[in-house]
Length: 151
Length: 151
Image 1 (cartoon, chains in turn red, purple):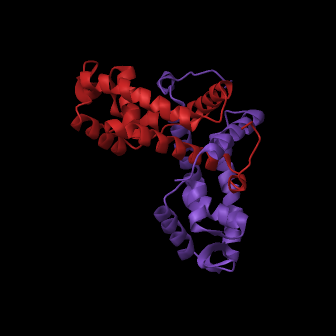
Image 2 (cartoon, one colour):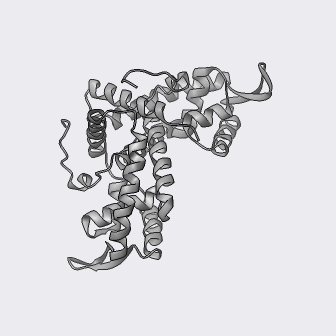
Image 3 (cartoon, chains in turn yellow, blue):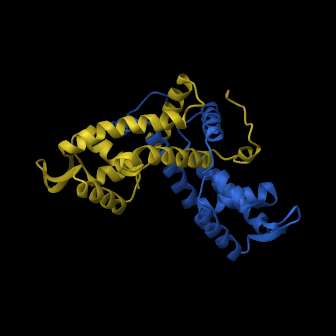
């Protein structure tokens, strides 16, 4: 489908970019949940695992800021990943009052599989866009997210 | 900020377009909630009121399909709007077994105010994008949403 076509009259009434964002996000999360279900992860726990693996260790406040979730939601999601043996909380050498969320070896292994499943789900979500359109969507969303303030 | 700049290293690790969609959507919803709070609406109840007013009357199944929400979530949100006197359920003349969700006069008045507040919130969410960038983001999201299947 080329840009500008809006063949479903149902969707034409979704005039607001905010509403489109929310419906597109719900679609991406649903597809990610379906894909990640094979290894017992959900889109949200995967997004935490992803940031933990990529950073090598990150504190919970920072996870909350990056994902725009409440600290209490982060604690619950990290608890789930700790129970599954995918991450662990360790003392931060640079700030002894803080604790870092770090990946376990099993977490790093699981992340590699999860990353492939999540990529496939995203491919499905974005299948109507060409590669340059996907790249541009990514850039536009990055600008919006970078301009927003954490809670 | 111009496209391609990613000044916050925190956000650079949000490599996945799906995750960016979810964070951008959370930002838009938070800003809409803050704006709509003045008249006692939330982003989700507003999105229902919006579709009800624009269509003049719509059934709950169709609301669930369009917003990619569960039917039970839709029932709860419509109940809230009924309790606030903004919408009402009426028999559908074309299908006597179905009921349409229709706007009340008060609902149409409230919607006009809510639309302005939501527009201002969206303007804030998208402030780092130029008008053509906003229009393109809208088009890209429309294509993604149109290609997705309802639950």
